[in-house]
Amino acid sequence: MSLKGRLSINLATTRGSWGFKDAVEGCLRHGITAIAPWRDQIAEIGLAEAARIVKENDLQVTGLCRGGMFPAVDKAGLQANIDDNKRAIDEAVALNADCLVLVVGGLPGSSKDIVEARKMVTDGIAAILPYARENNMPLAIEPLHPMYAADRACVNTLGQALDICVELGSGIGVAIDVYHVWWDPQLEEQIARAGQMDAILAHHICDWLVPTQDLLLDRGMMGDGVIDLPAIRRMIEQAGFHGPQEVEIFSRDNWWKKSGDEVLRTCVERFESVC
Amino acid sequence: MSLKGRLSINLATTRGSWGFKDAVEGCLRHGITAIAPWRDQIAEIGLAEAARIVKENDLQVTGLCRGGMFPAVDKAGLQANIDDNKRAIDEAVALNADCLVLVVGGLPGSSKDIVEARKMVTDGIAAILPYARENNMPLAIEPLHPMYAADRACVNTLGQALDICVELGSGIGVAIDVYHVWWDPQLEEQIARAGQMDAILAHHICDWLVPTQDLLLDRGMMGDGVIDLPAIRRMIEQAGFHGPQEVEIFSRDNWWKKSGDEVLRTCVERFESVC
Image (cartoon, rainbow over the protein chains, first blue to last red):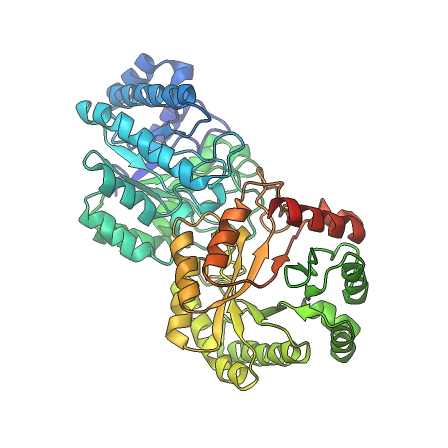
């Protein structure tokens, strides 16, 4: 069965060996026709060339990583972040991405005020949303695991992300990454709610290892951890999202040390046997 | 101003240098008259001797750590865990503790079924609750940070813990540890709810470091991290809990390497200046 429309590779997964061009060629060798690149990978090869490669190979871009990082210590910083997010929207449009993924940011500077940081996030998204709508680029808030609340994203549950979507209206939804949400007692009801809102824009997969050695860079390959991937997939499909599952693995000491081909071969095998 | 009734030391905090007896003597040297010991520390000195020391020094025991760890792979395991929790209740009674803290346990064996693990937890607490009530020993469910959902506790939010309290009735409440709950978007409303239920049994403090180097053993001293401790304290006091704040710091590479006296001196200083 073709992987087309079923499996996407977030190019963080092969970051240990490959930049954008090598990663695309690698994906194509393994029958994978959907990718999600990072902005630094796009910058390295150049936006026009990346867009040409996407178009020439008829690739689906399941998301551009990433916009967000809204909170700042002053108004100039907030504005700079908004401007950068508009550039990210431009890039996502050039790549014909399904969405721009937003990792919203954490506490700015030495702040301990997470309520204020969350307000900055909502205000920041509100500031870029008209531009996203004009350009028909859906914004996907990715709630991050609570262990990233301080330094990466102060939106930490699917329910919280959906509340922001409700507040801000059309043109915005969520990216559901199993790594961030698998533990949530409200997961099933919030995925169903997201479906009713037609707000599911992406479905990211990997696994939670026990023990986890590093808060950021020790994600597991599907099947090597404790996440019930088929159960979450069923919830997401029942909620009406049938886009590709996107493999996103940060793994400094394991998968990033292996060859890109070995990583992709394993992704495909595990996708078919586990997910 | 006396620390009596205001500050308690969880004896994990001085685990790097001291067992039970030395820790009590250290606390008394620093004007601290409330403690929360661990069962292994009690076992080491013997329950009768520990109880004698508590009584002789008129110590407040703000909690015994810990019961819980209910999930198991089979019925025999579940029953063994229930039996062990009853022994923990006996020990808490002997020490005249304010509550027995429950760290409820994670996924048993190779299970990926967190819904089932959560059911085992509720069933396990239900099984020991009559015995706890007979002995007038309040059970305090401690919701643990979601990063411990797999291996330590599948109760991961205050709201989820309170739902269990509602389901099971009297004799049970919650231990609120800022480390586990500070990130929760529902924190303020759930603390207020806990107050309305008269369910707050303990208030643990420490800090969340950025970056955090280890998921378990890199907690920070109050003031060294990003948690707005006064804000959470206000929520808890407004909810009607005015018991001591209990310092619980697991810190393998920092505080556990310092002398117990330096740790306690710092706890007192930071408690007065930060909390």
